[in-house]
Image (cartoon, rainbow, N blue to C red; front, side, top):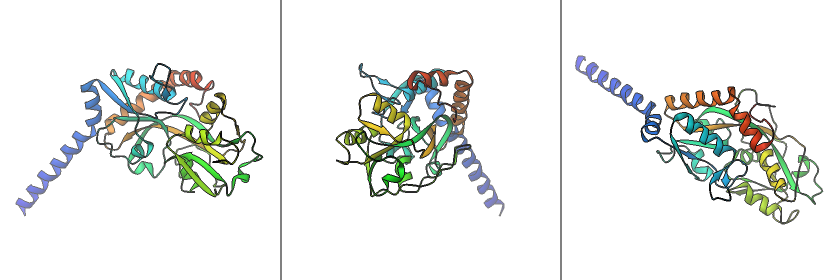
Length: 275
């Protein structure tokens, strides 16, 4: 019995040691290499996109750069597909995700959400020649969404958002067909072909819809509120020290007005607090 107890103690101490080592692994790697690898969207203006100089630009990109600056490290961007991000288990391919990701119960099983940094309403948009006036008109219609997004979950009636203070929502639309895209831009491209040609509507964040209209897409945004998205920076599960550091940094950015300034730069309004 004594021998068994001794072996058990060694195992428990080993587990504690390994857990402690894992807890700071990502943060230690970032600080030792002086490099933060950030996953973001490749083609999702104004959140993230390649500008005319073929450089990453946008709100999420500026937020990422500010985080790296406050960590005292350089930054590198990668652009994995959204489904690769939300499944977790990144295996060190990137350290942080800043791509306007909504914290949901399902995603929280494999990901951590250290800090919400802005909020945006989600709405439907139709072609400018469409006769549809409300979300009730879209039952049974073909609706385009970003693949693995909260918008897709909403249309499938599986969406659960448990962030504090977010308004409750109801599943008011049952589409006839859900068409998914790697980027909302591709959905807008199909909608611009004409009313009902490939799509009857697109469900997306109001910021994306407004940006699309601003850049000439022939769309009309329906007034109906669908749901409000809290958007969070995201990490793989396992490094509590890294999460705490990121929470502190984002809180400082809010308190000092840095996030508000970036929001005004890219959206012309402050969406860093829930309206």
